[in-house]
Length: 126
Length: 107
Image (tube, rainbow over all chains, first blue to last red; front, side, top):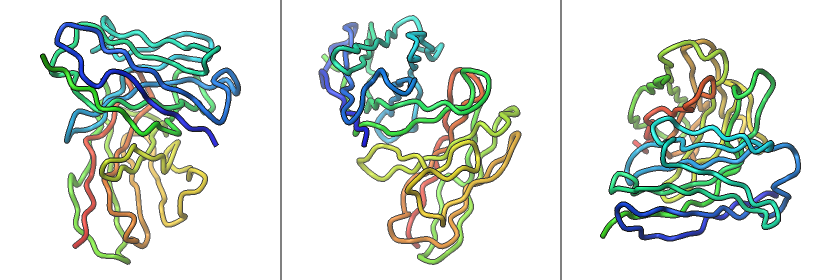
């Protein structure tokens, strides 16, 4: 059974870079042609998609964050990561990693997130 | 961006009730619509994908329907463990967007 676990700095100063890692266990990050995603949720609010990386290495980012986001896969470590630069208090949120499953049809349409990691809270504060 | 609007935003119901949550997209998204359940302090869990396909392991009391712009999630008979927040999500175009959530509470 595939499991995902986020880790990284829980407290980041404004203007600095947020760095998180998602460790994949119970399967290889390189198998099955899956893709991998980051999603966040500010305290008490709804879900915001950050971006995902295809098994090919192609990335898609939310345009609202695109200039600040990098998602990478580290196959030898069975992990993928998120970097978000120039953070502000608005970036305070629970950050989730998830596997992306694609159904039939034209890419990048028709996809869903399963499973999700348990999430890690990142607070941006001086 | 495609806006996803759920209704109602909150709902009170009793164990055994039949409940329906609606999700409306700001433009047609075919059947590229998924539903998630989130309990307090937990990550979202996939319930329904591609509008009407039940994720493995999810009780058959959950069902989804719709196409185009209007979608529904139905719980045929509420169980105590079903009280949670539900989100819809479109995967028709980038950026992927979620509804604002529907909080289902015990009456």
